[in-house]
Image 1 (cartoon, helix red, strand yellow):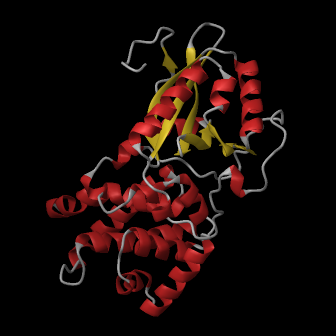
Image 2 (spheres, one colour):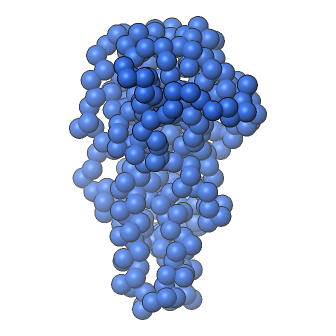
Image 3 (spheres, rainbow, N blue to C red):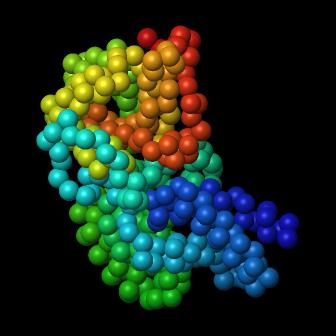
Length: 322
Protein backbone atom coordinates (compact mmCIF):
# COMPACT_ATOMS: atom_id res chain seq x y z
CA UNK A 1 0.00 0.00 0.00
CA UNK A 2 3.00 2.29 -0.41
CA UNK A 3 1.35 3.78 -3.51
CA UNK A 4 -1.70 4.72 -1.40
CA UNK A 5 0.39 6.65 1.12
CA UNK A 6 2.39 8.38 -1.61
CA UNK A 7 -0.74 9.44 -3.49
CA UNK A 8 -2.84 10.55 -0.51
CA UNK A 9 -0.40 12.10 1.97
CA UNK A 10 0.11 15.35 -0.06
CA UNK A 11 -3.59 16.12 0.43
CA UNK A 12 -3.77 15.60 4.19
CA UNK A 13 -3.40 19.27 5.19
CA UNK A 14 -5.90 20.65 2.71
CA UNK A 15 -8.36 17.96 3.79
CA UNK A 16 -7.84 19.15 7.37
CA UNK A 17 -8.71 22.70 6.33
CA UNK A 18 -11.79 21.43 4.47
CA UNK A 19 -13.05 19.40 7.42
CA UNK A 20 -12.38 22.36 9.72
CA UNK A 21 -14.48 24.66 7.52
CA UNK A 22 -17.30 22.13 7.68
CA UNK A 23 -17.10 21.40 11.42
CA UNK A 24 -15.62 24.51 13.04
CA UNK A 25 -13.46 22.32 15.29
CA UNK A 26 -9.80 21.46 14.79
CA UNK A 27 -10.10 18.39 17.02
CA UNK A 28 -13.06 17.02 15.09
CA UNK A 29 -11.48 17.90 11.75
CA UNK A 30 -8.40 15.86 12.65
CA UNK A 31 -10.61 12.88 13.49
CA UNK A 32 -12.52 13.23 10.22
CA UNK A 33 -9.33 13.40 8.15
CA UNK A 34 -8.18 10.18 9.78
CA UNK A 35 -11.58 8.61 9.08
CA UNK A 36 -11.39 9.80 5.46
CA UNK A 37 -8.01 8.16 4.95
CA UNK A 38 -9.18 4.91 6.55
CA UNK A 39 -12.22 4.84 4.25
CA UNK A 40 -10.02 5.62 1.26
CA UNK A 41 -7.52 2.90 2.19
CA UNK A 42 -10.31 0.33 2.40
CA UNK A 43 -11.65 1.41 -1.01
CA UNK A 44 -8.24 1.87 -2.68
CA UNK A 45 -8.42 -1.36 -4.69
CA UNK A 46 -11.55 -0.03 -6.40
CA UNK A 47 -10.25 3.49 -7.11
CA UNK A 48 -10.45 4.35 -10.82
CA UNK A 49 -8.14 7.23 -11.87
CA UNK A 50 -10.06 7.53 -15.13
CA UNK A 51 -13.13 8.70 -13.20
CA UNK A 52 -11.55 11.20 -10.78
CA UNK A 53 -8.20 12.41 -9.54
CA UNK A 54 -7.06 11.21 -6.12
CA UNK A 55 -7.68 14.72 -4.77
CA UNK A 56 -11.27 14.82 -6.06
CA UNK A 57 -11.93 11.30 -4.80
CA UNK A 58 -10.63 12.17 -1.33
CA UNK A 59 -12.75 15.32 -1.17
CA UNK A 60 -15.85 13.28 -1.96
CA UNK A 61 -15.06 10.87 0.88
CA UNK A 62 -14.20 13.67 3.31
CA UNK A 63 -17.30 15.72 2.51
CA UNK A 64 -19.61 12.80 3.11
CA UNK A 65 -17.78 11.87 6.31
CA UNK A 66 -18.31 15.44 7.54
CA UNK A 67 -21.99 15.41 6.62
CA UNK A 68 -22.47 12.17 8.55
CA UNK A 69 -20.63 13.63 11.55
CA UNK A 70 -22.81 16.76 11.47
CA UNK A 71 -26.10 14.85 11.66
CA UNK A 72 -27.95 15.99 14.77
CA UNK A 73 -25.16 18.31 15.94
CA UNK A 74 -25.55 21.91 17.01
CA UNK A 75 -23.65 24.59 15.13
CA UNK A 76 -20.45 26.06 16.57
CA UNK A 77 -21.03 29.77 17.24
CA UNK A 78 -19.06 32.69 18.57
CA UNK A 79 -20.74 34.66 21.38
CA UNK A 80 -21.89 37.35 18.92
CA UNK A 81 -23.97 34.70 17.18
CA UNK A 82 -26.08 34.00 20.26
CA UNK A 83 -27.63 37.40 20.96
CA UNK A 84 -27.00 41.10 21.32
CA UNK A 85 -23.95 42.73 22.91
CA UNK A 86 -23.68 43.21 26.65
CA UNK A 87 -23.72 46.75 28.04
CA UNK A 88 -22.19 45.66 31.35
CA UNK A 89 -18.38 45.17 31.26
CA UNK A 90 -18.67 44.14 34.91
CA UNK A 91 -20.93 41.16 34.18
CA UNK A 92 -19.83 37.79 35.63
CA UNK A 93 -17.33 35.99 33.41
CA UNK A 94 -18.98 32.59 33.69
CA UNK A 95 -17.83 30.16 30.98
CA UNK A 96 -20.37 27.98 29.19
CA UNK A 97 -18.44 24.85 28.30
CA UNK A 98 -21.63 23.07 27.27
CA UNK A 99 -21.75 25.23 24.13
CA UNK A 100 -19.66 23.76 21.28
CA UNK A 101 -17.78 26.97 20.45
CA UNK A 102 -16.12 27.71 17.13
CA UNK A 103 -12.41 26.99 17.50
CA UNK A 104 -9.51 28.96 15.98
CA UNK A 105 -7.21 27.26 13.47
CA UNK A 106 -3.42 27.64 13.90
CA UNK A 107 -1.85 29.16 10.78
CA UNK A 108 1.21 26.97 11.30
CA UNK A 109 -0.88 24.08 9.96
CA UNK A 110 -1.58 25.96 6.72
CA UNK A 111 2.03 26.41 5.64
CA UNK A 112 1.85 23.88 2.83
CA UNK A 113 1.85 24.13 -0.99
CA UNK A 114 -1.12 21.77 -1.07
CA UNK A 115 -3.26 24.62 0.26
CA UNK A 116 -2.56 26.96 -2.65
CA UNK A 117 -6.17 26.65 -3.79
CA UNK A 118 -7.51 27.36 -0.32
CA UNK A 119 -7.59 31.15 -0.07
CA UNK A 120 -6.69 32.35 3.40
CA UNK A 121 -9.77 34.57 3.55
CA UNK A 122 -11.97 31.48 3.54
CA UNK A 123 -10.76 30.63 7.04
CA UNK A 124 -11.61 33.99 8.64
CA UNK A 125 -13.54 33.54 11.88
CA UNK A 126 -16.40 35.86 10.86
CA UNK A 127 -16.98 33.91 7.65
CA UNK A 128 -16.77 30.54 9.39
CA UNK A 129 -19.21 31.66 12.07
CA UNK A 130 -21.63 32.71 9.33
CA UNK A 131 -21.16 29.38 7.53
CA UNK A 132 -22.08 27.59 10.74
CA UNK A 133 -25.61 28.99 10.46
CA UNK A 134 -26.15 27.19 7.14
CA UNK A 135 -27.62 23.69 6.90
CA UNK A 136 -24.75 21.21 6.49
CA UNK A 137 -25.42 20.38 2.83
CA UNK A 138 -25.64 24.05 1.88
CA UNK A 139 -22.40 24.63 3.77
CA UNK A 140 -20.77 21.78 1.86
CA UNK A 141 -21.95 23.12 -1.49
CA UNK A 142 -20.73 26.64 -0.68
CA UNK A 143 -17.28 25.39 0.35
CA UNK A 144 -16.89 23.00 -2.56
CA UNK A 145 -18.06 25.50 -5.19
CA UNK A 146 -16.91 28.92 -3.94
CA UNK A 147 -13.82 27.99 -1.93
CA UNK A 148 -12.43 24.89 -3.63
CA UNK A 149 -13.86 25.72 -7.06
CA UNK A 150 -15.16 22.28 -7.95
CA UNK A 151 -17.70 22.32 -10.78
CA UNK A 152 -21.41 21.91 -10.18
CA UNK A 153 -21.22 18.51 -11.89
CA UNK A 154 -18.38 17.38 -9.61
CA UNK A 155 -20.23 18.52 -6.49
CA UNK A 156 -23.37 16.79 -7.69
CA UNK A 157 -21.32 13.60 -7.93
CA UNK A 158 -20.02 14.11 -4.38
CA UNK A 159 -23.52 14.51 -2.97
CA UNK A 160 -25.44 12.11 -5.25
CA UNK A 161 -27.66 14.88 -6.60
CA UNK A 162 -27.99 16.97 -9.77
CA UNK A 163 -26.07 20.05 -10.94
CA UNK A 164 -29.35 21.99 -10.86
CA UNK A 165 -29.85 21.06 -7.21
CA UNK A 166 -26.26 22.08 -6.44
CA UNK A 167 -26.73 25.48 -8.07
CA UNK A 168 -29.97 26.02 -6.17
CA UNK A 169 -28.29 25.11 -2.86
CA UNK A 170 -25.41 27.46 -3.67
CA UNK A 171 -27.78 30.37 -4.23
CA UNK A 172 -29.51 29.69 -0.92
CA UNK A 173 -26.17 29.39 0.89
CA UNK A 174 -24.89 32.69 -0.51
CA UNK A 175 -28.14 34.38 0.50
CA UNK A 176 -27.83 32.86 3.97
CA UNK A 177 -24.46 34.55 4.45
CA UNK A 178 -26.03 37.95 3.90
CA UNK A 179 -23.47 38.89 1.27
CA UNK A 180 -20.42 37.97 3.37
CA UNK A 181 -17.76 36.15 1.36
CA UNK A 182 -14.04 35.53 1.36
CA UNK A 183 -13.66 38.00 -1.49
CA UNK A 184 -15.06 40.73 0.73
CA UNK A 185 -12.47 40.12 3.43
CA UNK A 186 -9.32 41.45 1.75
CA UNK A 187 -5.87 40.36 2.79
CA UNK A 188 -4.46 42.95 5.20
CA UNK A 189 -1.51 45.13 4.35
CA UNK A 190 1.17 43.43 6.39
CA UNK A 191 3.15 46.54 7.31
CA UNK A 192 0.05 48.41 8.45
CA UNK A 193 -1.16 45.47 10.51
CA UNK A 194 2.28 44.97 12.03
CA UNK A 195 2.36 48.61 13.10
CA UNK A 196 -1.04 48.35 14.80
CA UNK A 197 -0.12 45.12 16.57
CA UNK A 198 3.21 46.57 17.74
CA UNK A 199 1.40 49.51 19.29
CA UNK A 200 -1.26 47.22 20.81
CA UNK A 201 1.43 45.04 22.42
CA UNK A 202 3.26 48.02 23.89
CA UNK A 203 0.05 49.50 25.30
CA UNK A 204 -1.22 46.16 26.67
CA UNK A 205 2.05 45.40 28.39
CA UNK A 206 1.85 48.80 30.09
CA UNK A 207 -1.83 48.25 30.98
CA UNK A 208 -2.42 51.51 29.10
CA UNK A 209 -6.18 51.51 28.53
CA UNK A 210 -6.20 54.95 26.91
CA UNK A 211 -3.51 53.88 24.45
CA UNK A 212 -5.39 50.68 23.63
CA UNK A 213 -8.70 52.45 23.06
CA UNK A 214 -7.00 54.82 20.61
CA UNK A 215 -6.21 51.79 18.43
CA UNK A 216 -9.85 50.66 18.13
CA UNK A 217 -12.54 51.37 15.55
CA UNK A 218 -15.67 53.03 16.88
CA UNK A 219 -17.71 49.85 16.39
CA UNK A 220 -15.02 47.43 17.58
CA UNK A 221 -16.23 44.02 18.79
CA UNK A 222 -14.66 41.96 21.58
CA UNK A 223 -15.87 38.45 22.36
CA UNK A 224 -14.49 35.84 24.71
CA UNK A 225 -15.53 32.21 24.22
CA UNK A 226 -16.22 30.16 26.32
CA UNK A 227 -17.76 33.16 28.14
CA UNK A 228 -21.04 33.89 26.29
CA UNK A 229 -20.56 37.66 26.46
CA UNK A 230 -19.49 40.15 23.84
CA UNK A 231 -19.09 43.91 23.69
CA UNK A 232 -19.39 46.48 20.95
CA UNK A 233 -17.75 49.91 20.87
CA UNK A 234 -14.67 51.59 22.31
CA UNK A 235 -16.27 52.58 25.59
CA UNK A 236 -17.26 49.09 26.69
CA UNK A 237 -14.02 47.60 25.35
CA UNK A 238 -12.06 50.11 27.41
CA UNK A 239 -14.18 49.57 30.51
CA UNK A 240 -13.64 45.84 30.24
CA UNK A 241 -9.87 46.32 29.93
CA UNK A 242 -9.90 48.48 33.07
CA UNK A 243 -11.66 45.63 34.86
CA UNK A 244 -9.18 43.06 33.49
CA UNK A 245 -6.12 45.00 34.61
CA UNK A 246 -7.79 45.65 37.96
CA UNK A 247 -8.36 41.91 38.47
CA UNK A 248 -5.15 40.54 37.00
CA UNK A 249 -2.72 43.37 37.62
CA UNK A 250 -0.76 45.60 35.23
CA UNK A 251 2.14 43.28 34.36
CA UNK A 252 1.79 41.33 31.10
CA UNK A 253 3.84 39.78 28.32
CA UNK A 254 2.57 39.23 24.79
CA UNK A 255 3.95 37.09 21.98
CA UNK A 256 2.95 36.77 18.33
CA UNK A 257 1.21 33.96 16.50
CA UNK A 258 -1.43 33.72 13.77
CA UNK A 259 -4.79 31.98 13.42
CA UNK A 260 -7.33 31.70 10.62
CA UNK A 261 -5.21 33.91 8.37
CA UNK A 262 -5.36 36.66 10.98
CA UNK A 263 -2.77 38.17 13.32
CA UNK A 264 -2.97 36.91 16.88
CA UNK A 265 -1.37 37.68 20.22
CA UNK A 266 -0.77 35.36 23.16
CA UNK A 267 -1.17 37.10 26.52
CA UNK A 268 0.73 36.06 29.65
CA UNK A 269 -0.21 37.48 33.06
CA UNK A 270 2.18 37.82 36.02
CA UNK A 271 1.09 35.80 39.05
CA UNK A 272 1.87 36.40 42.74
CA UNK A 273 5.10 34.41 42.42
CA UNK A 274 6.33 36.68 39.63
CA UNK A 275 5.80 34.08 36.87
CA UNK A 276 4.12 35.14 33.62
CA UNK A 277 1.52 32.43 32.97
CA UNK A 278 -0.48 31.73 29.82
CA UNK A 279 -3.76 33.65 29.91
CA UNK A 280 -5.44 33.98 26.49
CA UNK A 281 -5.10 33.82 22.71
CA UNK A 282 -6.42 36.97 21.02
CA UNK A 283 -7.26 36.86 17.30
CA UNK A 284 -7.54 40.27 15.60
CA UNK A 285 -9.21 41.75 12.58
CA UNK A 286 -7.53 45.03 11.63
CA UNK A 287 -9.40 47.44 9.37
CA UNK A 288 -8.24 50.86 8.24
CA UNK A 289 -5.28 50.86 10.62
CA UNK A 290 -7.38 50.05 13.69
CA UNK A 291 -8.54 46.96 15.54
CA UNK A 292 -12.09 46.15 14.45
CA UNK A 293 -12.58 42.75 16.10
CA UNK A 294 -10.83 40.80 18.84
CA UNK A 295 -11.84 37.22 19.63
CA UNK A 296 -10.26 36.24 22.95
CA UNK A 297 -9.94 32.48 23.54
CA UNK A 298 -9.35 31.25 27.08
CA UNK A 299 -10.35 27.57 26.87
CA UNK A 300 -7.27 25.46 27.80
CA UNK A 301 -8.26 22.93 25.15
CA UNK A 302 -8.14 25.62 22.48
CA UNK A 303 -4.85 27.04 23.74
CA UNK A 304 -3.33 23.56 23.51
CA UNK A 305 -3.92 23.56 19.74
CA UNK A 306 -1.20 26.22 19.39
CA UNK A 307 1.53 24.42 21.38
CA UNK A 308 2.07 27.54 23.48
CA UNK A 309 4.61 27.73 26.31
CA UNK A 310 2.87 27.70 29.68
CA UNK A 311 5.06 30.51 30.99
CA UNK A 312 7.24 33.39 29.80
CA UNK A 313 10.41 34.68 31.47
CA UNK A 314 10.07 37.80 33.61
CA UNK A 315 12.81 39.54 31.64
CA UNK A 316 12.13 39.79 27.91
CA UNK A 317 14.98 39.24 25.46
CA UNK A 318 15.14 41.90 22.76
CA UNK A 319 13.32 40.81 19.58
CA UNK A 320 14.37 43.81 17.53
CA UNK A 321 11.01 45.52 17.72
CA UNK A 322 10.80 49.14 18.89
